[in-house]
Amino acid sequence: MNVRLCLQRFTAMLLILIVGICGMPAVVLAAGHIDTDRESSLRVYFGENGTGFPGVSFSIHRAADVSETGVYTLAGDFAKYPVRLEDLDSAGWRALAQTLAAYTARDELPPLQTKTTGQDGECRFSGLTAGLYLVIGERYTSENAVYTPEPMLVSLPGRTEEGWDYDAEAVCKFDREDTPAETISRKVQKVWKDDGNEEKRPEKIAVQLLENGTVVDTVTLSKENNWEYTWENLDGSSRWQVAEANVPDGYTVAITQEGTVFIMTNTRPSEPPPKLPQTGMLWWPVPALACGGLLLIVDGLVVRRRQGDGHEKKR
Image (cartoon, rainbow, N blue to C red; front, top):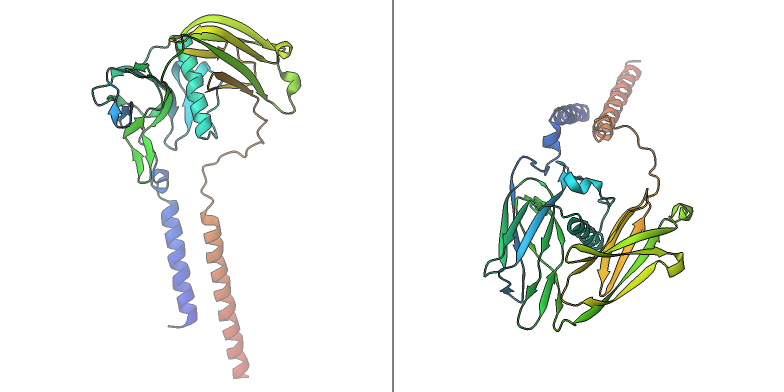
């Protein structure tokens, strides 16, 4: 078989393959898309060193919708909260969970489902649609310690190495206090992330202190108090949270707790660069088509050269 025939056959097969793939539905090309119509379940475990904590109530809230490609959009009552969902690392997701949990308690948002852990420390939520869920648990008191579960955000279905898991499991992290004090203190610090936009900050902000989900105090933070405040002589048996009363326009809020300190961060997103309109066109075949065209050109040049050599010989 000569070189010209090999080139022609290879080019023809390449073009047939490209045309066939381009004609496939997008869902086939995008393997691993979420089946948003399929129900999911979530199993939550709360325990320590293999011993489950029984009789603990957990509630679940659907905080965001999720697209087939895994993009989240705040949903329902959560759509009004100025929080960020994009480009979060593990610390960012933890802060988001704590922030939404505080607003959920303050605004008394009704849970989608409430379950109680069994003797194995597990409870199971079923019949859940695809989305991002906020899971909140109550405290557990043993003979030696008090365990406060951290709120957590769980994506359903869950992502695994094999694909999407529609029967997900989550292990609840917690804070342990061996000997809770009768009275405690809590401090809040404001952090601004708005480089280049400092003039857009408000002169002051209001922070609410929540005791077991109820607002019991509101304080003002400003430059005068270095954007921080400390509460003293709080009940050590209560669960304490903070929430920003009114987030400044153009900012998002994230709240984390480090020991006795709440860090409340307001971020002003930078202006994104203009995006080109999405046409839905697949661009990856362009290089392959270019290669195919180049092969055809080379084939044509080879044929032309051979024809020229033939004419020379005849002379």
